[in-house]
Length: 345
Image (tube, rainbow, N blue to C red; front, side, top):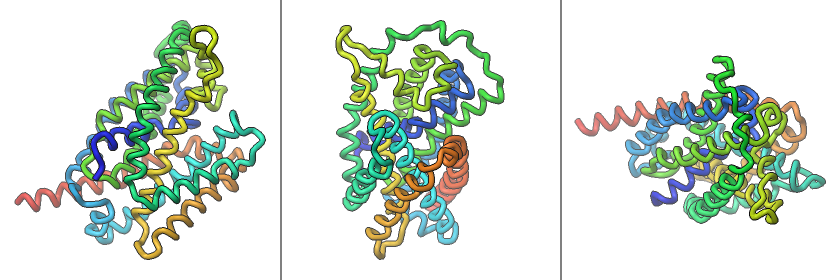
């Protein structure tokens, strides 16, 4: 049984996880200086979908996701396959972009397979202990992440130029709505992973995580400008290079960037745990290890090796996550609601 603080911490990381390498750059490319407005509108819309996840958690009660899917029989088998494919897709995406991020700024001459191999092995090791380890680690990382995030936001405020934000409301409506859709999909869909827990509520953690994303997007546009921001693949990291504290403490971007590493780590751990939850009990540990290593192999040999494959994920992933959400969450919600009404009668 996970605590409220553990659930809050994990969902905070999940809300932010898909914006490293995808969310910021894709949305800036669509809505330029209006991007922080699309983040704000997307947050409001996202609360509607978070409501359904919270209701599912309430109706599910003490049952695990695996137990609910078994009760659903044929429909449960379909949802199990969709959830499993979703978890594996998240693993491939997370491993790919952590490789790309590390090889772009830190380990330029290191083979990309070597960068994510320790992480893949760590995911296998953590999953052996079940969700408890991941949730406790997330709780320990949460105050560090918040401190680093607030430090970066405060330090960067002095470099913001409001002229870079002007003029507002210049984005064509189709592009603005598309950017709102991308934000909502990328910020809400990882909360599906919270279904492996019991009685968790994601509203306040989603709002807090979204606040940090909105503030970061505002600073990206205000510091480097919308045109330059569209060029950078990781604009959220580039602006950290501007940080100077007391005019002599500088080049701390690698330390501050740990908050993004924490996001991806927790997100990968939860994806790994969901995959393990959904596979058969017989030989579960070996099958789980095989699936994680398979995702690791796909991430560096198929996706990360070819830039065209990265671009496919770059633009298609928000659509994929939205489709999974719209297929699975309404089915679960109405099934559990119907059972709840039957039991009350």
